[in-house]
Structures are given as structure tokens and as C-alpha cells.
Amino acid sequence: FRYNRLPYIGGVTIALGSAIASVPMVFNESVAKWFNENFVTTDVPPPVDLETAFEVGAWTWGWMEPCLGEASFVLLCLAFARSQIINLGYKPYTSGLKTRRASKLIEAYPQYNTEVLIQYSESDDFITIDK
Image 1 (spheres, rainbow, N blue to C red):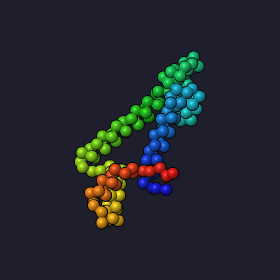
Image 2 (spheres, rainbow, N blue to C red):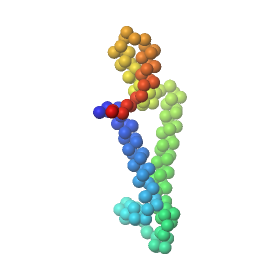
Image 3 (cartoon, rainbow, N blue to C red):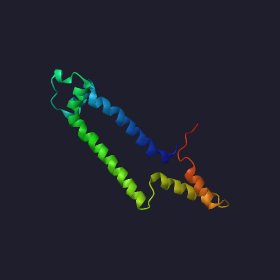
């Protein structure tokens, strides 16, 4: 197991889990009622106001919008910060790992051309799927 894959695996897991969970939490009546009962505790509208998924969404949006809006804002800020890090000449996580990998290749194979080793290290897939 390669530990340098953990941030990517964690990111994919959180992103997919959040994406899948957010839809029923907004539009599914039974999930919304369960979530409201256990975490939100707001008044449940009368059954006539929860007849369609859109009506359920109108009710749940009151507590889901701050969460989804804040998550979107955090992602926007992280993307902006990453672009500024690149503008300052620093390398993001993956680029830094590739640079360290290139340095290790240069140390391990000093008989080869340094530029070729750097180019190989940067062009080769960082994460490979074990077969």
C-alpha cells in the first residue's frame, strides 16, 4: 500500500459520499424527516406541502443551503489559494511529490542524464493501479 495515495483516496471518498448523500437529504421525504428529527429539529410542514420532491426540497433547503453553500465557498477558496501558490512558484502536493521522486531517481541512477530522469519522473503516472 502506498501512503502517498491516501490524500487522493480520502478526497475521492469524501467527494463521492457527499455528492451521493446530498441528493436524498434535500429531495427524499423520509431521509429529510429522519435528518430533521435527529439533527435539525425544525417544524415539519403539513403533508400537503410535502407531496413532491420539489416541495420537500423547498422545505429542506432552509438547512441544506448553508451546508452546501459553505462547502462550495470552501472549494472556491481552496482553488484560489492553489492558483496563488502556483503563481508564487511553489508546487502543489502532487508536483512536490513528483519533484521528490525525480530527486530519488537522480540519486539512484547518477549514470543517466539528469534532465531525462526529471522528464521521465514528471511524465510517468504518479499513481498506478496495481494489477
